Image (cartoon, rainbow over all chains, first blue to last red; front, side, top):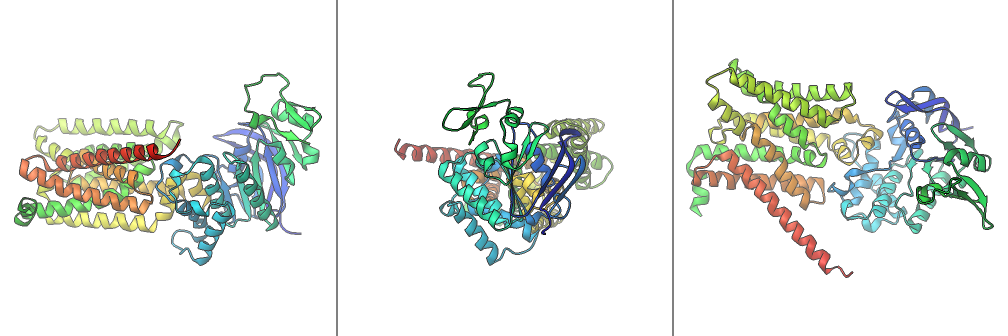
Length: 266
Length: 280
């Protein structure tokens, strides 16, 4: 049996000495996907930042690819949510994707033909080849997100960590993302993704529901129940004939982002 | 035509000023690119002014001003790093505190001496027309060092411009490369104070790189454009200073600021025209 890609035991995550989520226990095998679901501030991004070594483990243990988080940068790719520099930086899109190869080559190692091939291939997988020669700052938010996804794919990592990767993507780009995640999974990559979309979570091998605590963790069928979704989102599910929908029990329509909180389960 | 060339051909001090100015322009173009792209203008400004007490103290003690400037820069960077790491205060608060504190210390030191007026003017505004051969050598070595360090560290420097977290995830020690960039700013400021002074070196760091950021679509191109703008501004500024008998360092910086606003205007007009031609 192959070594787990990620193993967390009684893990406490947080920052600046403040615990955000305690008691995370999970094991992720290579070639599997984990969807982390929760509202804003629930601890999703904190968990991802801990996985990549940006935040320290507060208590418990976390093993990533057989070592401590952050120990193998060339084997871990990370797509974060915000890139404030993207409308300022004078870089062509292909150069941004090329940055994905820096971890493997270090300070002075030359980027070779294989690196260039991976950059071109990653742009093509996100149908962004035509954007490669264009300045990043001239692209729309959705186009930039495709370039950032291509950068993450170019790392050719064993652990792919995506923080709300569908943010800003239209329907066709979302299908590109789904296809890329499926291809990475088939390649044996462990994919960890945060999402507000329960439909996306249903496709994952495991789901972790967070609400500044672990609400549930396991297979989508076991975890995505009306009770756990109520605990996670403060919502109840109602069968309206065409499927099961998340509903706000307080009827505070307009106070919540429907994309954030109204998922679609089956 | 001779009015443009003769001042440099006929006067050794103008030749040395030109060479020193171009060397400063190249160093400022490279370092200024990171200052502009990473939003380090405030720490750049603070370093440019924070070296004052070091220079003033060194002059009072009969030591080289550059050594004092280096000490001032180290105290500035160390102080900002200490305050930000030991408190939850934002870095701009830490920079502001150190900036004002160092400037006040400089004024206090200067006020202790009655014979500081001339030296203070030289510190603040430089003496580009009084550059000696040894100053040129120091400037040349500093510019070469800035170029060499940037060339070696271009990957983490680029990643820092893109996203500090990505720099760390890629396996580079973002904190140390950030400090290295601050050290490069400090070296550029410390060495350049002889040429254009501590007040005006900040303009040389920001204006050419700012103008280049509006034009370039690559970081390397941005550095090259900034170096060209900076070097041409040296030539034009020195000529204006020579013919109109104006302060040389200030003339150079005024030309650079004028070029920045001219580029801003041209880019703005070009964007407006492009927007007007796009069908609704």
